[in-house]
Amino acid sequence: MAHTVEKIGGTSMSRIHELKDTLIIGDREGEDLYGRVFVVSAFGGITDLLLEHKKSGEAGVYGAFANDSSGHIWHEKLDEVAKAMTEAHGKVLSNKADIERADAFVHDRVLGLRNCLIDLQRLCSYSHFRLSQMMGQTRELVSGLGEAHSAFVTSLLLQRDGVNARFVDLSGWRDEGDMSLDDRITSAMADIDVASEMPIVTGYAQCAEGLMGEYDRGYSEVTFSKLAALTGASEAIIHKEFHLSSADPKLVGAENARKLGRTNYDVADQLSNLGMEAIHPNAAKTLRQAEIPLRVANAFDPEDPGTLIDDQPAESPAVEIVTGLDLLSFEVFEQDMVGVKGYDSTILDILTRHGVRIVSKVSNANTITHYVDASLKVMRRVEKDVSARYPSAEVSSRTIGMASVVGRDMNGLAVLSRGLTAIADAGLEAIGASQGPRNVDVQFIMEREMLEPAIVALHRALVEEQGSPSLAAVA
Image (tube, rainbow, N blue to C red):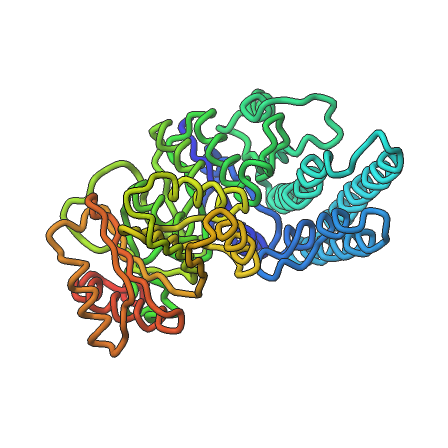
């Protein structure tokens, strides 16, 4: 039976009881219910409590344990997790027996994790063992708790409504083996008949490669894409709480934003580079190489087909998305740089050593400027290292905004000149702009406070004039 592999994100998971009646079951009956494999994220906010808050950086269980493994703060954080998990499944489960089973599941997993961390504390009280050498495995163990809980709860919810749902736990809980990711997935799916069962799979998968070390919190999309590729899915679908559209509807207005409908993996990669991930770039690579199309759909608009992402070129040139990102401009000016090799590679090595993500870059005879996604605190360390290597150079960092116009094919649209005109007509000023020869994205650099109004102006000039139906009109 041809099947799809579908992923539900954390924000949507908190409303899984609503999605059960629309997205998952809807008007399907009998065998029509099946042929779908669901990969689930943790309930909204749970991973923040387990690891650290994604935006504020506030420590969760892992962060507290890493910073003070001998103290009791991580115990309190783990109690918070147990309470939040219990509250989360209490909101989506209505049957008393199901709630009791979910409560017992949380108690067992939280107790197991607590005992494991205590044992690790004891082990590292001996000088032969270093906690720092075990933090990668510890982060893996802690992170898997959230997806295991949400997958178990979702399977209970669906079973109560007569769906033959099956909890598929890839988290390696109390597993003595150390499998590769491929083997972990293949082994778990080996005896499952997707024609008569609905697998509910954890977004986290324990494996010898260590997903967290390579992908950190993008691991669920990596699991999702691998599962689709290894099982030969006809299509991979990501259900988000919004449509993939030409700009943020909250910024440009739903009456002006356009649903993409179709794009390709090249555009998806550009969006990932701008922090607006349709899918993790490594996950996109897996699907692209397996020749599996990706669909990004609105979980709460199940009748709409969403946006299909594949390798097909655009039928005609068009601007598809206008988006932007708050960045830092890191500039190295050295009058004697011209004609001398090595500056670029040295600066790149230092940025890499400090874990700085480079979004874009420009250079001329004596200046190299990187536009980076990092904190000022980190960049001060980078400045110090670069200045030590090139003491006569002027090294500086400043906050900027980058607006980016993206499309599969923008040839002949004069996006660079029209964009600069649109920005100027809105009473704004671009302090830089760049366009590559492949013409899939054009970047405009400006003061950070001008970014949002610039996106609105660019969208109005480059997208709204195309006349395709807006999100509001489609709805």
